[in-house]
Image (cartoon, rainbow, N blue to C red; front, side):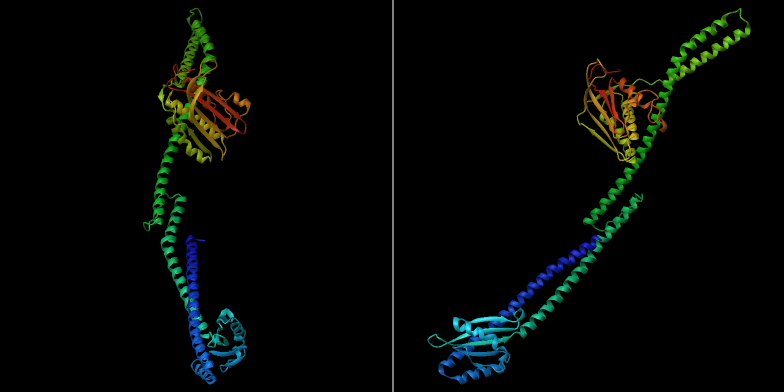
Length: 497
């Protein structure tokens, strides 16, 4: 149900209750006033007749009583009068009053016993007849009879019915008018502006971040429209920023892959230099010796010189590979670890949302400055976060934390103060065998997914160059937890371990 419909129904019901209550109270007041006026006029008539009847009975003028009744019959034939003696028997009554006699018989007996007047409304809703019974007294105050006045309330009932019809019609007219005006105002100032906002939301949800809504006024709905337009503008800017960050992330990942390749080349070159270096030197020396012997045939000496040239070429190639892959030393300087780590976390937030993984970053505000290489610290954070996001399924969580720490760089060394970088995920985890080989070059649990097995060894090497320490705990199916300690800038002797 639309909000305008709900508000319209609420307005209609509220106006119906208020106006209905007011109309009902007006009808009750009108009925009370009419009853009071009718009772007062009838009692006035009864009092006048009481005085006249008492005088007629004291003077013994029974004919005067009949004249009074006849005069009243001519003036108001609807009113019935009854005169009772001291025993309650009817002495005189109006013509045609037989049908109302039973209404005042019991009342006259009560008046003769109590010597007090009685007023009573009878019939359904007490709107049929008005009874007024007055005692008749002699000069000594003794009861000599009773006077009963019965007035039909047809006129009162008709007046009430007309008033009721008029009031109901007025109330219904007011309710209809208020409802129509209220519905028109709600449609004009609420429903239509909200429909424009909904259309704008649908356009934004469809990818159109240029959609705006025209504000219809400066009221609350207009404020909502302005807030919506501002939100769309911020979303457009945020989307552009995310796109730029995604491009930067791709470029950074490409650079990281290049670094991994260089590290692989370095590992391969180191292995080649170690494994074939000594045999190559022996082969080169023997070939030079053969080439220097003049007594050997020319073809043998020529082949020996060829072996010398080719072995020298192999040595140069290995040396070039080592020069190409050798990492430059880290430049350690005091820096804010929070800024470096936060930059990487913000960079990977988009990738986390894309993977439907919750990425949280907790840090303490007062962190000591660390002695580190900014690029190296960011590479450590990037490698650990990338591995954690890749290992965490959809709906999982990766928690990053920075806090002050105390650690031991290696067994037998003194403890140092520094900053702890913690990366914990709820991913697939590792078994005991993989955990033992996690820092081994070219070992990867993601080999089928493009893993080179060089990311964590590079991280381990960078942490070692900084004089830090690194630990990992993991359980298969429950996730992994990597902890990196970087010495603070106030530590003495900070350097490679």
